[in-house]
Length: 389
Image (cartoon, rainbow, N blue to C red; front, side, top):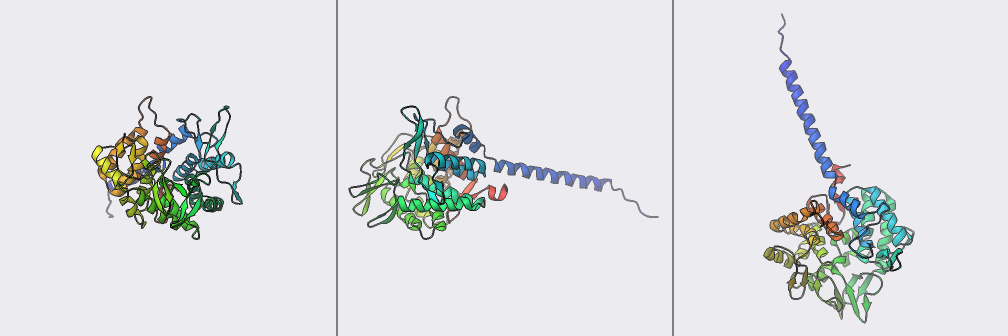
């Protein structure tokens, strides 16, 4: 007679395996959802972005909006895979900062400052453009076109980059192409004023890839020379100048490095390690690492030529320095940055982080948490590209 087997244990085992598999899949789904969601970005949008796509800096008397704020907001929306917010930010910029002249056929450089006027009305406060914001907007558009497979963004980004090259890049005798901070007001009597924080290396690399015939690769080399020359103590100034064939202390702002310059460390930290300028650029900025190691905090202000420091930098500085410490392999500095940046998620009552804290905090924490990176060609590599499609 046939032998009968007791199948109950097998059924139990199969059920257990199925249960474990289901639990594992659920855990993986939950982890992916957590990776794709960006609570800090959602908080930024809720706090600082109007429904119409205007980014507001509430800490200013004019309740100002800047082209910088719009450009950073677009970048964060791209990192978050939030196309609806990206388009709102772009549309507001087009309408209010560029006078509706912002398409691939006709691009007007956006005004850098918009807000409340003395008579109480709102509008453009300064029509001059800011080249760093223009660079970021062009970059955002080019990357949006690539990542979201929309040639409309790409064409607009290319047109804007061409306008920047035409109106905001000057050929300086003895140097070559250099980015002017804006088309008006930065060249006079043989002196050209420049801002080191306006030249993020990944952005320049991406523009060079998009427009190989443009000034971008040479501009990247000259930007490194600017930083290396003006940071003899390893601290970069907010402003510098080119005069008589060399970089000199800015005649208007002096050699102070503070709220502008802090972004130079951020851009250096975010640059792909394989970029040939990544290590030299970081090496030129070693003063900040040494100072934080000694004092336990970044200085608010530095005299770039002497290395004299004063004050304690605010929360925004830690956001900028987190990628810098990560790129240097400075575990102590990175741990200090993480500890301070926790205040962005758990603000003390009555001490809500201000606009600049939030913005540089998003750049810094987003990077060290792996939400995005840049490749050697400057292209944005967001985490959602693989995990969240």
